[in-house]
Amino acid sequence: MDSRSDAEVAVAAAEVGAAVIRERFGGQLERYAKVGTDFATEADLESERAIMAVIQGARPDDAVVGEEYGASGESDRTWLVDPLCGTLNFAAQNPLFSVNVALRSPGGDVAAVAQPLTGEIFWTDGTAVFIRHDGADRPAVPSAASRLVDIDIDAPATGPFLGAQLLTDEKLRAAFALRVSSTTLALAWVAVGRQAAYIADNVSPTSVHFTAGTILCQAAQIPVTDFRGNPVHTTPGLLATASPDINTSLLDFLAPHLT
Image (cartoon, rainbow, N blue to C red):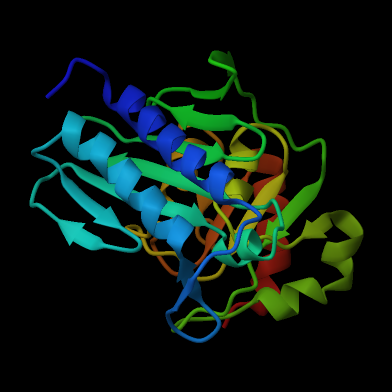
């Protein structure tokens, strides 16, 4: 195992994945069909290979779960990798996508979320959240000032689906500016003060799509709950908010839609 901290390994892995995605953005890419409208591209696969090379080189005894190539290894330390979160956006040349690297470990969770086109990396060592740009880090502070709330409206395979109801809730729309983006960027933006909240219907505690963003929000010490205000993953639903007041307000909006 090399001398870098887990957080440094996560940042390095996210950086190499982001470099691949940046280079591939806007080019012609072969698509590999998954389920429904979902697909992967050559960029997803190349990014994951680059990320895995960093992780496995630095932490060869750890387990790894990748979005494209699956799981390998057995350990109580598990890396969760989504090499291109927002592939549909990327393929459409919409800039809302990210590269996600997270470690779940008994010694403490770490995460790095790279935004390839801005060159930013949102990362945490589990105790604080930082934004890295051009090699320099600055602390990130959550803020509800924007009033922007991102609602993930992708329908889950199981469980409740509240996206449509929430988007047509007149009182909610009057109180908050709703946005729709299905990437971990939304969670990262809550952690660093660029959005007030993020709402998603059905999120697994081992999801490569959401884990890095969830770790960032928890490290920022902001409320991350289920739809009833309980600890996240107690029941389906994820609500990450920039402040306790916003959490309480949005839970009140959610309550009438729960069965």
